[in-house]
Length: 139
Image (cartoon, rainbow, N blue to C red; front, side, top):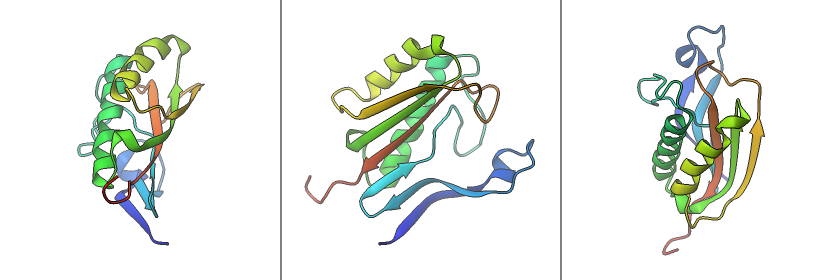
């Protein structure tokens, strides 16, 4: 089985303020399964944070990134199987889940939600990662 790595990057470029040097990517396609890196409110091309201070706005950007990456991998939102949502404050849950619910209406993935003390950057309040499949031809 081959593994295709989508949008490779190094953490020293993405997090220049941190002393890191890890080779990562935004997505891995293994067979017909797509594993996405946790998505946050970051423009994947410019690496700029967006919607700082706005949990719903950050969720919109994370979901837009997920949509774009799945399409780059040959999948779509409706083929998401598993969603994991990380929040830095439980009070963001309603705003975040409303946005995710709108993006995934009718999809019915399994979902796990966690509250964590922090994410990779202090301005990020939500991170979402997904596992999806690439449908067979004609599916």
